[in-house]
Length: 163
Image (tube, rainbow, N blue to C red; front, side, top):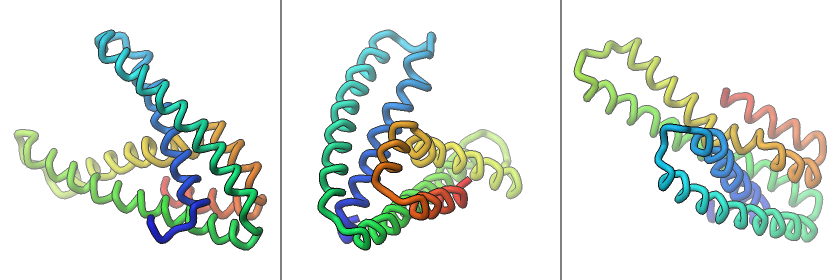
């Protein structure tokens, strides 16, 4: 990440801030079985993340005004590389979690079932840590203001490989 452009890191950072908000809205706020204290803690975390997202967006747009078209084009490629790096972490985590599940579920888990469990973990992790932010409408609006249609198609093609 340290070798990537500021533009690409800011793009990923806003994506992350927005998927944390999406997670709260889709899985915590509506769950009637969670304790009110737990929900309240996450409400304040959501509010903090909202502030971060606003600042991240402002900084990304400000920085975008300082880059050339060719620098932005390279930054789009670097953003795709950063998302692929996140996916690599998710693949490793899915494999580890599937292995842990197989080792501790209290019964024998065959290879085919283990692959199915790993694939389910990976689908879930990709949704939570990549797609829920990338599909967040506000992220799409900000991104679309900064890039060309061709760059957007490159990003969409890269994301499509992660489905």
